[in-house]
Image (cartoon, rainbow, N blue to C red; front, side, top):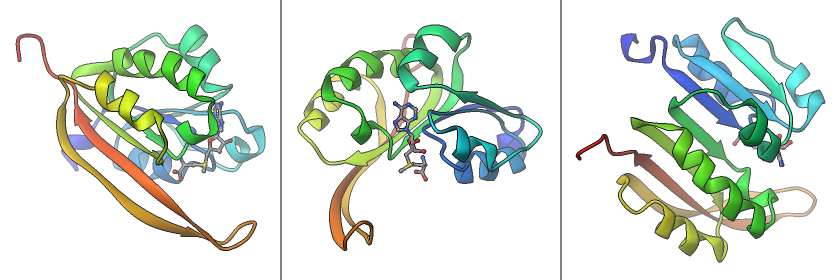
Length: 155
Ligand SMILES: C[S@@+](CC[C@H](N)C(=O)[O-])C[C@H]1O[C@@H](n2cnc3c(N)ncnc32)[C@H](O)[C@@H]1O
């Protein structure tokens, strides 16, 4: 698992840390951000640095570095479109050249905006699928996801 060693990862909307824990156990260093203090208190691990704040404040106040990997899974749909439009450029800037960005969210009109913003990124994967959810009532979401690589200078 040498390729995970010392990777700087940002997990935005980490909830109870399932993805953060998966990555840190493989050797990554993870900054895990969530607005929900209870969810964050559910997990603890060396090399996971938790930020109990909303994503907007995190990008405005806390961010000090570029990340090799940023995951924003199932969080953007909770933000108003106006906030997504403000935050996405900050997410893109925070990704290191050559780094990876993985986004998954409910399908929405903001997808076209995201596709325009990521122009220039290499798209390793992009797709849509249906996801069933049971709470509060059984329903289905149309999901959309991107796996992107930020180009290095000159690429
Ligand atoms: C559906 S969970 C996704 C958890 C995890 N990323 C996953 O895919 O398994 C969404 C998480 O986003 C967090 N969240 C929602 N709005 C947020 C915001 N404005 N800033 C930070 N976290 C937020 C919620 O507290 C929740 O833990």
